[in-house]
Length: 284
Image (cartoon, rainbow, N blue to C red; front, top):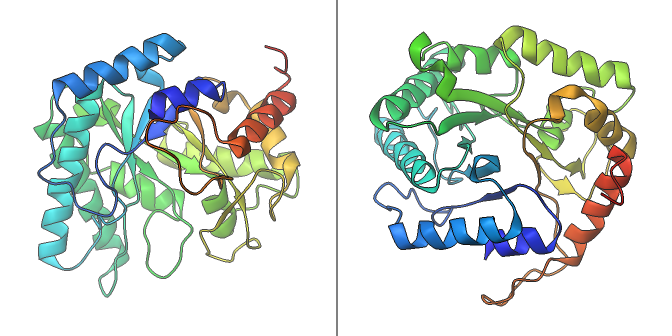
């Protein structure tokens, strides 16, 4: 149904959960018949499985200083990658979590070791992708340096199965100025690419309910938050957004949807219209 709803909205990529996001999912598999139905829905709508992202469960805290939580998060992320590989998706993105009472540098290394465990355990092409965070408290992944340290723990031979993506709301909330000018936005993207050594593998397109540097992860409809429309026009004009999935995580008009309703949410339709206008592809 996720694939069918994306197609109904005129989308060419989508993101989904492969297990309930409020559970670790460290024992959940992916049945072959479910994967086959998903692929059939993608094919019907002309979406390539390689343009699909999986979002890992929110409860995974791979940066936790508590051993029991860290061990279970490692198992959960590994199963996320296993299910992602079964779907033939590009990769699974995840929030690194919080260092809590622990040392942030040690936490970043621990996150990287967890990524390494996942890609060493699950063969294939699916990638584990770090998502930048809004920076509240000791949440990890706020800066390019933290993400670079995480990915540095992965052997060179496996680095092609890792990477990172950038959420616009998280960038803005963490104090990265992507809204004042095109030059400023490009400088932020340049810094992440230079420090980490590669461009982002995906973007999450979200406006922000709160101001620059608020550290609050509260998404708004594009052009209706503190970031405003110009930043998204600049981002869509940047070559780094052209060949990777750009995912909407914006609010919906309908909180509850019937399980068999394959129709698009009206807010998604409005966002897609804006994105086509801003990117110069309206009518395509």
